Amino acid sequence: MAEHSNELKKLTAIASDLELPSTLRTKAIELLGNVGTQDALHALLELAANEKLIAEERELALKYAREVIMSGH
Image (cartoon, rainbow, N blue to C red; front, side, top):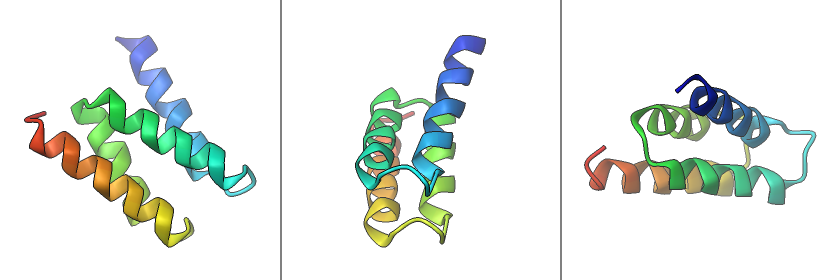
């Protein structure tokens, strides 16, 4: 379980690192969405609220957060 938490933290860090290319941040957001857990949902909502990210990345995080919610997690 701790390994899972560390993976989520790493993905969240990648998704919010503005020094990385947008393609890597987008991939990290997609991977968080695929995890589909409550912790991933929280991470996605934090990313959606991050005003430093570009609008498309925030919208993608919100899209995946909606999908996690709709899946019942």
